[in-house]
Length: 328
Image 1 (cartoon, rainbow, N blue to C red):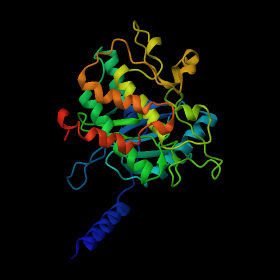
Image 2 (image 1 turned 135 degrees about the vertical axis):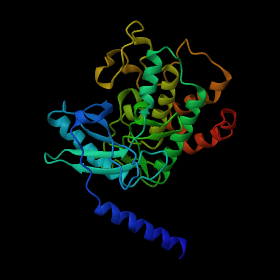
Image 3 (image 1 turned 90 degrees about the vertical axis):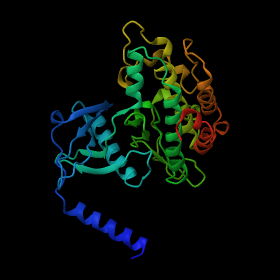
Image 4 (image 1 turned 120 degrees about the horizontal axis):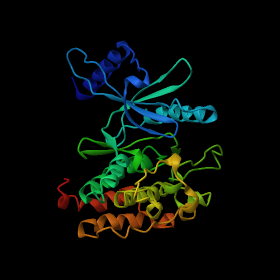
């Protein structure tokens, strides 16, 4: 039997087993371990019972928060549905794995995903709370390399703009073993030239998160391409150094060390800085190990989109540095 036919039969067998298996029953939220939350959505860990004596890995369940009401609830429910449709088509080691989607009797969707231990945002928040300083360069280099592989695939093969790159949308598996991009609820299609075609698709809208937006998005320019993701990614690299969201470093309450969640920020004093490159923290210790990281941060946050590198260029430029961090 040739390999192609063998693989086809194997896939047909897996599909048959999946169709014949008992549907996943998602318990009520209080019965599941919480993994995190965002605006109007919660993430839970779903432990799956063993089958045929084999232990099965847990899944993550993304569902609408019980706090959600009205139009916001409907909008985020729609995003979960759309995210499921996007993830079905994405298979890449640095993009969170799609496991399924379910619709409850009240019309609310739950998205089943590969389960990772935590997200980069939580790691950075904990480092701030514990006065541990910037993320070690070895971990940051690994994050940049992994996420650039995901972005290269997303921009050039899947033809999608992520549209909301930030530390809370980067998952971390095991002890910094691998980083995975997640949360595709506001992703946008790119045309063959890598641009968002608003003329052809007037219903498209760039959502994102304000503090991470590229200048061309804030200026509402007609021309937005994959480089908008690169600017946001540059600000994500900045987070690994400053341990706080872009443009908030000088309004952190150092005594109470309050957590900066999207829904609780007072943005009145920082909105004018959106779309710009934030200054590095004065307390940051510049060592040779951070040189490449800082170089990439500066290139990614250039004001003009054409002056920013693409994801592949960043990945290739890092390959020669992997040996020094024992990441090969």
